[in-house]
Length: 365
Image (cartoon, rainbow, N blue to C red; front, side, top):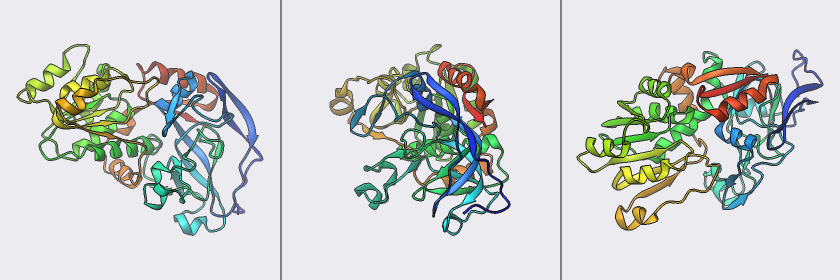
């Protein structure tokens, strides 16, 4: 039920996706809450690379099945966000430890809790619905003034001491932490993070905490490499300026890096990593690609016997992400570079698509 001291409007502004480059700002009803649900007033919503690919019409691939059309329109996009709690359904306050006025966040996937993966605690690979906010009509996203967290969602209270930019960065940082966990980094490893967007920079910060022997960040944009240094990179390399494969091999007695984490979303970064990594090394793929990527699989098997690990979403990583932000272990205020009002969503999406003058862009309703 809605707390009596919170006066909610009947309607709200929301970005609605109808198809590629057909996004509109419309007035729609404010959601109401049922038992177990949470309603928040959105304070900030980040634009993910997957959001930008959806906007431009690039297909996304979910699960085993290619799903052209990237999402189910009409839908409110947005799965990176923070909001202020304005209404709590029956039982939600006790379940999530939330009160009216708290800052809150919800993991980007709303699991079914009934499929094989959910029953085993692997909820981020939910097979029945795979309801990620902003992609499925059952789970509208955060590019609106208000947003409802369904009863099956995984919600957290956000510390009041975090800045808005820090809080909006919780979701990307959680994803970055999960990718680093998949890398199984050992003390003394040479680790390469390819791509210094918002995810890659979070991976650099998280990998730093694993105490690698040498942590290398790659990117084409010099300003991003400077922030990678702030995140803890020992060495930054620009593939436009040097042969990064030769450089990494020279730094490792010709063997190559122990762990390579791909976070660019560009097809060329994949074979680059396969050539750069040592025999028996670990390759982690996190990116969302706009096209299929082809590589020489002989390298993976017969030549190097590599460990190939995928990484998806940020399971169990939201609390450590908030802890990293509270401890100042990642410069989120440098990573979230731009903020736009909801009315300028088209300009914001274009800035993300161009990916030269920004890192993380957010909308403020």
